[in-house]
Image (cartoon, rainbow, N blue to C red):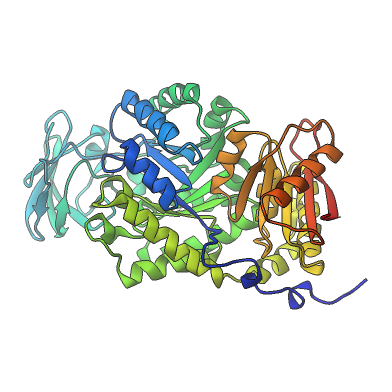
Length: 493
């Protein structure tokens, strides 16, 4: 047996990648600017892998109609439904928004006293929040660019001074000191909306303002095993309970917007890196989100700093990068998607695959509580090493649920990963997973049949040719829990 570090024998990622290959996925938020059939189809063509449907705005009927348009125009993309959770928002500002000037006075009032907001009075959707505010409290609007300082109480309202001004429009979020108000997530309205959308068929659902792993249980029970549950990490409490959350969550979002108004801004980059590393170790797809190409809401090109931000997230190892307002309400959603995809594609060329594969097998996977997860981790480590030692042309993950493909993706291998699955639903779920392409194959009645289907499919699709070595992973067809327990090296003929 060779004791040589396999990374020293590995060929560079450029052996497998070219200018048209992208392994980091693109999530695009769908909104008024992007929900026409023509725009959705163009966004898929430009590189959208996952469509995020936020439920914070509009009715459930509008959300269902939007979902159906995504299915019609972009049938290959996955759908991530984003439950709004207990987000506190202002009442609506006038169309076009208003400018809050630093030093000006403004009153925060319960929604019942201020059904509309303007430059002098801002309504708050949760009256209890206004009741809990004290002199000296700092209140942030939106992503924290506009900040108010509470100076006095006036009956049911509080008078504030604008300490950081800016434009506010729509119904921006309201963030007060975390200890002031504890709200339950998911909300009853979240669960009602989820129930409706589950009937329509969705691949994954994001839970907002998660604080502990317990916040995910109700959604997981309602969604069932077939729907991936994404934990949005945007509260300090969630960071404290990160390991428990990663045991329960199927995927994770680094939600930098709300996180950035709840922790010190200078901590956000370090939290992002720590979360991404932890998600990869646990085999959880991770989405980096918020303000990645923010200037493209109104500009045809991003700033250099934004381009660098996206590239750095790729180098961190993120599974996907996300567009928010850029694609939901921006001037050119298709251009925003194409730009994000182009940046990610270029960064993927310089991604250090050997670093991840070299370090992950040394990590202790004993924290995995499920027997199947521990077996899967061990087999995945062996598959990564085999792909390097044998300079495999492709890693084939034969999978019904997608679990086998997600398991090998945690190693961020240089060789392409192709999930061979009989189900279109599973193929759409894997659109969030780093580096995973999919091919549809017939259903298999045995492991041998699954392996044969997978190898033939990747040969036919051009991932491998005669003489190539292919690493094949397969899960047990009959185990009640997903487990990847088969590893084979196959020469293509």
